[in-house]
Image (cartoon, rainbow, N blue to C red):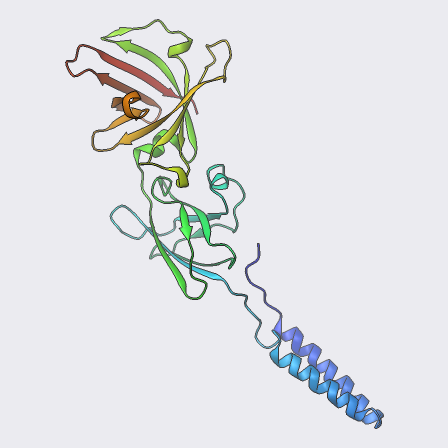
Length: 279
């Protein structure tokens, strides 16, 4: 996608000189056509003056000044910034609108974008930091002037759980009061933890899809779906909403292994579920 249209001023000047030379020679050869050639020459000169041959014309653009900071508000230099037209393109790593940009030493990217597009989805990454759970949408309301936006990148627990789009986990154990159930299809399911679209997020909830695993009769067959939410203060994950919600404390998380525990208020029942990362 091209946002700038520039002509080559040097080539235009060369063409103009050639035309002038041609008409000046014609003026000296034919006196009867003198007034006509003069008028044509004046017309060409006027067109040249108002054309992009002088300095080159730049189409209107939406200017963006993007500040990338960490959770302390400090600038993040050399962070990769990519622009997408849709969130599905961002999450599924589709085609970017432009080549990637990188923030300068002040954590800033300055870019001119298409004047006909108001919203962009942006992917920002630096090492293990990203904007996947802060803000992935940029709005550019100003056509005249500079649109200034600040986006924080971080490394929250949710990223380890879902990645940019989703991660698949498999339940490996189902334990009640210290007694493990015999492994079977129902307690060995796949759990796809999915990051919900930016426009659909409610308290940063995510989507959960359960599928039959390779120990089941029909691997990959959907079982059910739900939503999940993470509470950083209590280090808990809640599945479902309202009276159907069930909350588990995360007692262990290593990036590829997770243990969730749920207890009744009197500790009469203690449920423990263990999971391992598949991909």
